[in-house]
Image (tube, rainbow, N blue to C red; front, side, top):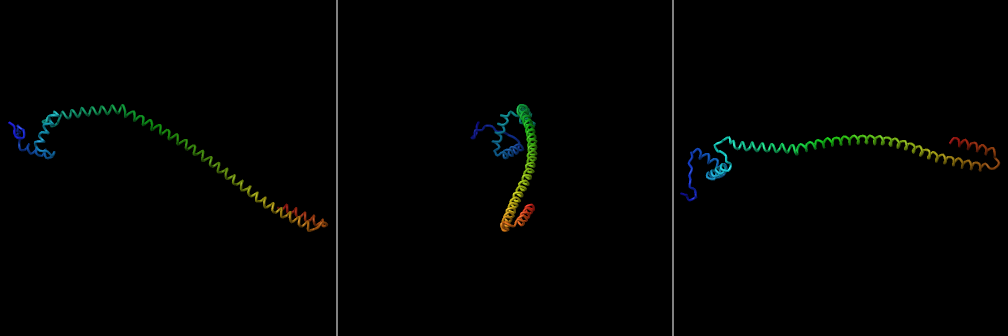
Length: 184
């Protein structure tokens, strides 16, 4: 015979079990009846033995799954990860060789450039000294030309001033002018 709510069976259990059921139901936020229905559905679907506290079925299932996952990971490691690791290690070694070679070439090139720069600097210093000497010589030549021009002009004026008949004084003037030219 059915009741108003459609249920026909009743279940009897101890006060202690009722208290445990009450606590569990509150903990999961449902009524005792809802919680009891969920428990029955859970054990029905999972085919677990609620009396087996060690849950050997679960342990066996987990162990089997663990072995499967471990086997899968090992296979992936052999197929994918180990070749990747080997390739990465080889690539790192190649990169190290490239960097080493590059550094050696750069160091040699820098040394050569430094040596060439020093040679160029020395050559430039010598060129500057020569340019200064040439400049000084040109200045000296200009001063010499100016002094000669002044001396020659003075000679010509003094000779003209002496007149045509003073040969001895003209010779003295000529000798003095030659001496002055030698002193330049």
